[in-house]
Image (cartoon, rainbow, N blue to C red; front, side, top):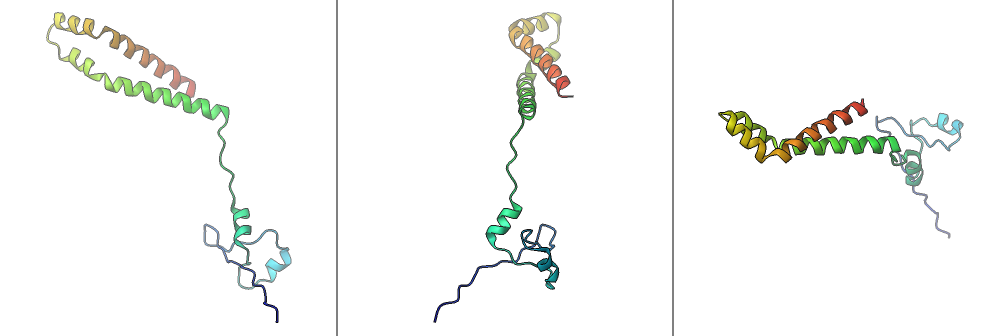
Length: 125
């Protein structure tokens, strides 16, 4: 007596809870099904629900690069805000001049970063 081969079958529902149909099955078989489901294998389910991974375009990559540059520039500004506060809290012109002289490189770099942010944000719009 030969063993009867049992084919593994599954019932699946889609994301909204509706029956999932094997699109390779003839339509007549789908319409005759009174349960509302059509049996499909796991391999068939995987094939029917496969979504290819998104491959970013050159434009998307360029946009992401600009957004990263903006974020880095803003982080630099945030990390050097203490200098602006020191200048604001200075009590006389001599103290302000001293602070500006001490942090001249950083103040110049902050101006450059703000200009870069404005330029990149304009390009993104």
